[in-house]
Amino acid sequence: MARLDTIECRDALAALPEIPDGFANLLLTDPPYSSGGMFRGDRNVATSEKYQTNDAEKKPEFLGDSRDERSFLRWSCLWMSECYRALADGSSALVFTDWRQLANTADAVQMAGFVYRGLVVWHKTAARPQPNSFRNECEFVIWASKGTIDRHALPGAKYMPGFYEFAAPSGEARVHSTQKPLGLITALMEIAPEGGIVLDPFMGSGTTAVAALQTGRHFIGCEMSKEYWAIANRRLTQVSGGGCFVDG
Ligand SMILES: C[S@@+](CC[C@H](N)C(=O)[O-])C[C@H]1O[C@@H](n2cnc3c(N)ncnc32)[C@H](O)[C@@H]1O
Image (spheres, protein in one colour):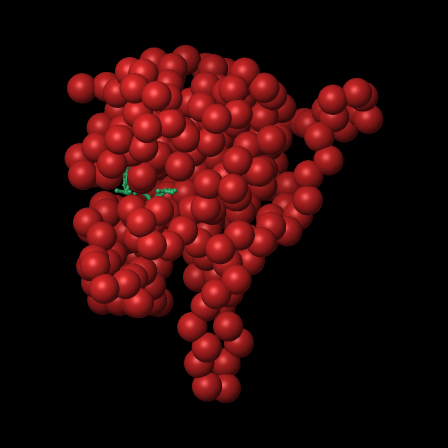
């Protein structure tokens, strides 16, 4: 999976070991949360049911979203450990999660070897109100690093916020049921050096890849679902004006 600007249609666990040690400069990824409930039965519900309460048209199902707590933790440790190896020293890891999987994801990041640095909040601006309840209107990005971070206030140092407000994609722009806003991914990516390599093993509709291309960075990554892999490559082709960024 070390081919630059390419999304491979593969299982991340098979593809990640092919990346050379220290190759990438940022892990920015949105794995399947295996969420939508506290029990395995809840999680086995189709992703279009779990994550699309309001849309008339259902999006294709995506993969790997029905693990129970313990298998989610173990699986997360496996892929995160490979990502740790594939990152350069001092690089950041940004991993999306929701309130249900926050604890597991923070544990997995540390078990994989990263230094847990903090939590970035994404305010989604909309969420279902429920009687006598708080709205779950935020998702979270676990921020971690491979070893120490350069904290010198030198020219070019990045000063990143800890809170972002972006509406989730809607209408024609929404092609994946848990697609992240392009503006949010672009803003988070600022932490990576310009021209650096951004790794996303769970590309979905390719938002990370699009943001990388548009900001002068490289991407590597994969997506196991053929349908979403094709959608991601369509988006990339539109952004690149017909260039070839696909992997057959
Ligand atoms: C939460 S979605 C990512 C959505 C993406 N951020 C976007 O904006 O479109 C996670 C994706 O990971 C894919 N996936 C699940 N298990 C995988 C695996 N083992 N290897 C590669 N991709 C996988 C799913 O099919 C799904 O599309």
